[in-house]
Length: 419
Image (cartoon, rainbow, N blue to C red; front, side, top):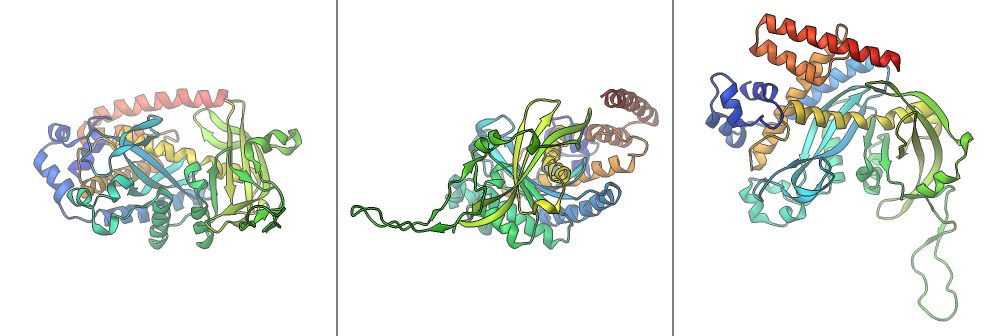
């Protein structure tokens, strides 16, 4: 309880054990350190409980919104110094947009409309770690976790775990790192899961189903061909989009909620064929392309194993757009719950800290949902401030904060109405 109170009370960059000792009554640094680093409590049981409870919360949201629930996979980096922290290495950190010394976690988030919550996590171990058994032992990594796994492999591992817990979702989403991975797409096919995964503009697809065959040898020189070749060339998405005319797009006016109202997009759907997996099997997919309307020019490409006729242009565009909310959960978790502020080096400490951040994140989501009738624009920061005042302030403090929040919300609603 003291640790979660510390995560809530302390601002970004300060939610560590030393500051918690100063701010949380009757707390003590060595007790925190033992609790997070050395104590044997089961962080996986905590995460599983968070996942099951979050599923029930999101199910109640779905019953009101009538929209499908997504399970979004994404990774997030935590900048760290030195080389002792478990999994730390020079690797790409999206938080700064370049290669930095950091730890990277892969996360799963349940999302329905603008309600999202993190429900699972995995720490990514670069090869520099998985290939060094002694280093892994020193960091307390269990032997079963030492083998190298890619981020898409960790994603499938989490998805299986979430399914096993009985958590409910309708489709799986992710960015280009996951959408580009044919093995992940095939894995979701085998599990009977609908996916809408982003891909890059350099991805190639076939506009008609190709037939592969080994070409006849041409001439007397050289060796006979051994690899099958398609009877038609693939096309890059960045070239395909240039072939589209105005009639190939459908404008949708309500794709995703924003702070200024509804996001509008042009949507294009196309049946395509893609080579999947190591054996190069050709599978039919639905290509989803969206472009912003009335805002910064931005194009997004996604592939789905759903048929074109299964969902409308708006539904596909809405599902594609929901990845936005997992980015918001990362921002909220780092800015409001000290997700990156931990001071631990070992495997157990990293997961202990994260399990409590996930628990605190679910707590704040519940506060927003329970108060949405009175305060429909309540943000995670609003919920956190009110929780801190309720825990550590007076009734007068709470009254003042409520008045401030309502004044902000009236201005924000006026902006939405004007738009």
